[in-house]
Length: 201
Image 1 (cartoon, rainbow, N blue to C red):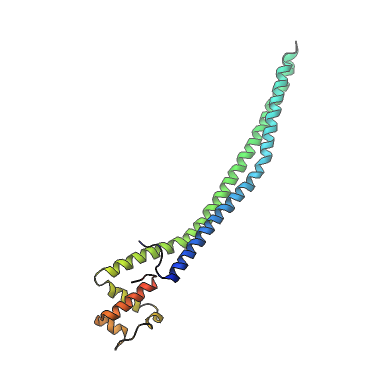
Image 2 (cartoon, rainbow, N blue to C red):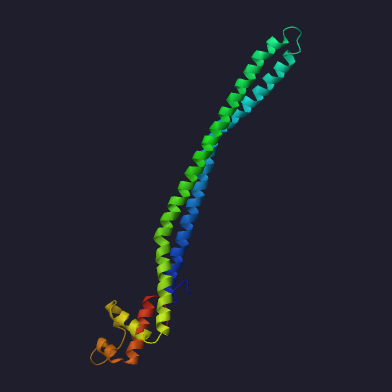
C-alpha cells in the first residue's frame, strides 16, 4: 500500500495537504488549551472565597473552643461562634462550587474547540487521502491482472483529452488501435492512466 504518489507534483500536493491538516489540528488544540487556561483564571475568586471561608471557619471554631472554657457562660459563648464557623464553611463550599462550575465550562469549551475544528479538517482531508490510497491499490492490482492494462487504457481514453496528445496517433486513431489490441498503444494509454493517478508504470 502506497501512502504518497510517485509523481513529484501529486506527491508534493499530498504532502502539503497533510502538513496543512496537521498544522490546523495542532493549532486548534493549542488554541483550545489557551482558552481553557483563560477560563480557569475565572476560578481564582472561587479559590480565594474557599480559602477565606476555610480560614474563617477554623478561626471561629478555635475561638468557640476557647470560649467554651470560660466558666458558667462558656457554652453560651461557643454556640454563636460555632454557628458563624458553620456559616463560614458554607461560604467555602460556595467558593468550591464556583470553581467546579468554571472547571466544567472550561472543559466543555475546550472539548468543543478541539472536536469541531479537528472533525472539519478530518472530513475535508481524510476521505480524499483514503480515496487516493484505495484507488492506487486498485490501479496497481489492475495493472498486474490479466487484461488490466486494457482497462487502464480505456480509462485513459475516457479521461482528459490533453493527456492523449503526447501519444503518437496511429493510423485510425488511438481508440481504433485500442480496439485492435495494439500493445504499444495500450501500454502508452495505461501509462497515462497511471500518471493521472500519480503512479509510475
